[in-house]
Length: 171
Image 1 (cartoon, one colour):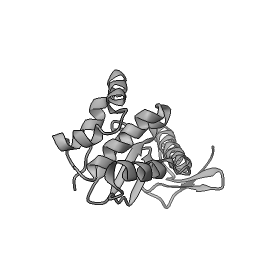
Image 2 (cartoon, helix red, strand yellow; image 1 turned 135 degrees about the vertical axis):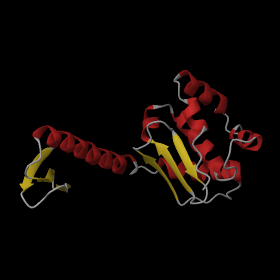
Image 3 (cartoon, one colour; image 1 turned 180 degrees about the vertical axis):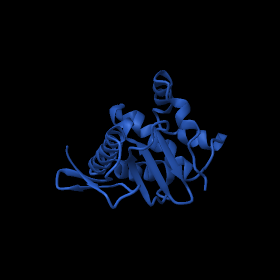
Image 4 (cartoon, one colour; image 1 turned 135 degrees about the horizontal axis):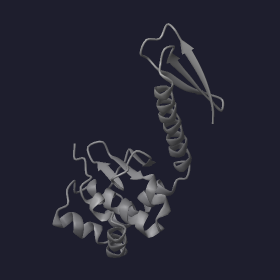
C-alpha cells in the first residue's frame, strides 16, 4: 500500500488518514517525530487492512445461510437476528452475542477452522439469543448440534474453548 504523508504547520495534535484510491493519505502535524510518525502510519495501515478484510470475508453469505438452516432445524424458525457477521477485532473470543440487539459476531480467525467447528460456534451464539447465559438449558440446546462435543474437544486442544464460554453480552 502506497502512503502519502502531508505535514501541516496548522496541525498541532490531530491526525487524519484516508484512502484515496490505493493510496493511504495521512495528514500529520509538522513537528511530529519521525519515530512517532512510523508508529501512527503502521497503525493506520493495519486499521485499513482489517477494514478491507472484514468487507471481503463478509461478501460470502455462509453465516446467514447457516443461521437460517440452524434456525429452522433447531429453533423452529423462531429466532430473529439483526446481524450475523465475521469481525476482525475479536482476538480472544471466537464469537459473541448481544441478545438485546440481536447481533452475533464471529471471529475471522475461525475461517481457518474446520466448518463443523465454525458451525458449532454459530450454534453456540444462536443459542444465546434464547438463553443469554451458560445454564443447563443453554448447554442442552447447544448439545443438539451433532458435532458439539467434537468441536469443543477440538477447541480445547487448540486452547480456545474457554474463550467461547464467557462471551455473552446480555445487555
